[in-house]
Length: 110
Image (tube, rainbow, N blue to C red; front, side, top):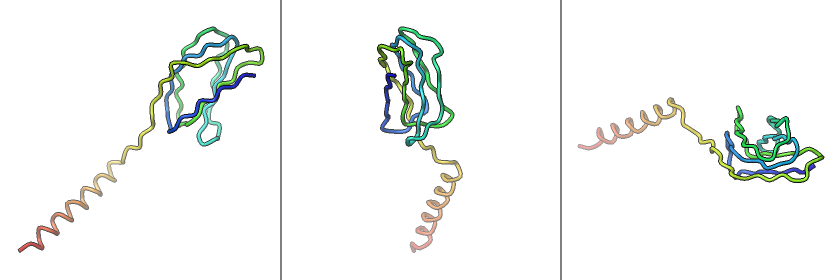
């Protein structure tokens, strides 16, 4: 059974890719080596475009073809990186700290 691994150097949450294959395939998403979700193509096709969305972020996709497969190729890969966004409360606490430091400096000057 042909298997192709796509490793990302960062965590992603959406992948778009084109698969060229001659037998049914499935994808499994992984995060740090732990399997998250599996998606099944259901039919054989010569060229299929896939959009893989996951509820949780992942850093690897494994593409498995059926045992009858002669070939599997992947192309046109595009993905979205997961970026950490600070919470509003964290920004508010930071802003209050900066304002407190600034007001303290202003009070010390004669």
